[in-house]
Length: 383
Length: 92
Image (cartoon, rainbow over all chains, first blue to last red; front, side, top):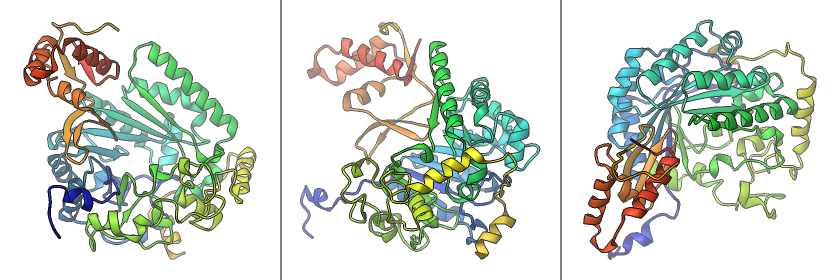
């Protein structure tokens, strides 16, 4: 191939690089949240990548242009090499994010992470109320530990995000959730309405709030935004509405294979952390370079653009807005990963969403919950 | 909020990390799970914000680096005001 000064213009792939690398270091977790985004059959997945394999993935993705590196899981604190992985990530120039439950954290480890160059810590809470929090987490000590660690994270000067997954068991206390976050001096608060994939889909009946609950929570959040801004508090409240109460779907991951690259504990690479449920053979970093995975693999290319679309998406004048919505939701609810996301009122399967909304109005408080743990996962793994 | 004045010293909000991103071909501000791409002039100004130089020193330094650009004072102060409103920097 001839090389001229402008050769790179012809050979540079038109596909933009991944910006966000989410490293799901392990599926091990001391908690049992019934809306966990890990696969139902996590207990059945293979061996975790080694320290060296992870560092190699970080290096490859950074070279392509990834700027954000998230350490997630399961509970990433379970990995004993976390300090080393943080240090390597930071050395490569990533902004490093630790996404944790706070269980397994202590002041010394927070300081060691700081020393290694960790930029930010996100702690997830299950509720503002100790009893509800611990019931959902499946641990009596979780809530007090989280409070203590959130205070320690701020005391050590980190930017801190607090994440509350909201659902019918905690959404009515959104005022208390926000006040707790203010008291803990969070910089960002994610009030992330539960999305119904994986474990959360199993538990949808027990978790989906009613429309009235959701509207009230959004109104209260807006009131707090105004009040806090007037007080000069820089805290940012991010309210994520659930797909189930929308008439149009969300653009899945801001576009399939556009920004996000998730690598699971065993090295499987995904365009979204839920995508493992789809009937697609996703590539593995043990077998392929990240460059190949991002640009050339079937798994990443399949839902890029709109060639894959069926009706009603194909001829829809809004298709650019949402690219047909979430592929996992289409697969779970319409039984076809190429279908329109049933959240869309134009989908022939939209009735399933309407039925779920109607069911949310009827649910009793004693609806059973399937907790995310090894034992329950083995049941799904066996199928 | 008032415009920063020449004797004041801006510093980066520790919430943000400022760096050059080769793949983006620009300076960026990185923050929890996000990135702001900066244009050339914003990048050049923020590169001078180190918590030590006051606004006057930053302006002098930029005028020395870009001698053809003429007087930069008003533009720099205006940008620093925006940067403070965005919470990217603090001014003391």
